[in-house]
Every structure is written in C-alpha cells, then in structure tokens.
Length: 94
Image: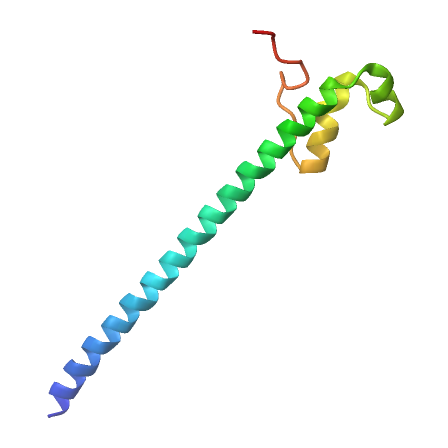
C-alpha cells in the first residue's frame, strides 16, 4: 500500500513541478518581451531626440549649451548609451 501511495503522490509532484516550471518559463519570456519592447522604445526616442536637435540651427544649439558635433554624445548620456563612430555625422540626403 505504501508503494502505491508514493507512486500516486510522485505523479502529482511531477505535475506540480512541471506546472511551476511552465509558469516560471512564461514569466521569464514575459520579462524578455517587455525588456526588448522597452529597449526598442528607448532607442526610437533617442533617435527622434537626435533628429530634433539636428534640425535646430547653431544659435539655438548654443543657447542650450550644445554644439552640433556633441549632439549624439549628449543624447547618449541622457539615454545611457555611447554613440557609434559615425553617429555624430548627419545622415546623407537621399
């Protein structure tokens, strides 16, 4: 009788472990999706900020304490990201 009880409860424990594992995996996947979405949104905002500042003339940039060649670096500091080598150059006209 003891063996049958252990076998029955072992099956329930395996099912509970499987459910707990599935819940943990779903939670981890949710966190990855949310973090990825946040990173994409932050990058979109960062690029929009750079483009907005590039549209300003040199006088307006000077008023806020920026030079054209420091736009990407300054925005990168705000968004916690270092600019890449070519990022300070304005995009080429199409």
